[in-house]
Amino acid sequence: DHWSIGSIMFLGPKIKGNRVLGATDEKQFAIPFNPSTLAIDKEKGIRLRPEHIHEALREYDRVLKVEPSHEEAHLFKSQVQFEQGKVAESLATLRRLLRKNPESHLAWFYAARSARTMGHTDQAIRDYRRATELKPGFAQAWLGLGFLYEEKGDNKKAVRIYREAFELTQEIAAAHRLSTILLKEEKYAEAEPYLESISLSDPDDLNVRVKL
Image 1 (cartoon, helix red, strand yellow):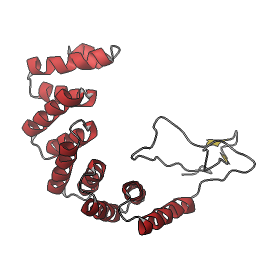
Image 2: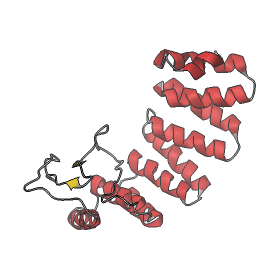
Image 3: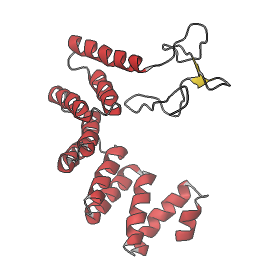
């Protein structure tokens, strides 16, 4: 855009959430920060630029040459590739990891996301399913699986998936999807317990209170 700086969102394994890294001054210019401590450092810090992302990719490659089965390096590299729009390359990175470590639930999850983005719905379903088999409490994998069935127009399977997800994890997002589908199908009695769960988690949610 027209501002002097841009932004990027990082999502991935072991990335701590609810944080904003970096800052701008009163003139909207980026303030340098220390790449090791992530603290603001006007004197000795750096301004994060695209070449730093490319350097991170090269670093992951160096790690993988020394330790080809390094799970985190594969996962982080695939996420950077995905965020750059290189979805096929991201998926290829994950498939290489899965050949070496087929028990990585995160690799199956991210592979499913890439496959879904590429329009390979059936493969994405298989990958999400494998992630849930390896880690039954993996709420995001269950939700991804449910979304895919909704996209296919198979609400019956989506409801079954969301119910299983909610029973295993008590994930409120699953309750939201269940209540939405069931209300559209006019199955009010079935939707009610999920609406109540949502209401308990957020008593100020006026939409839920009206539906109840």
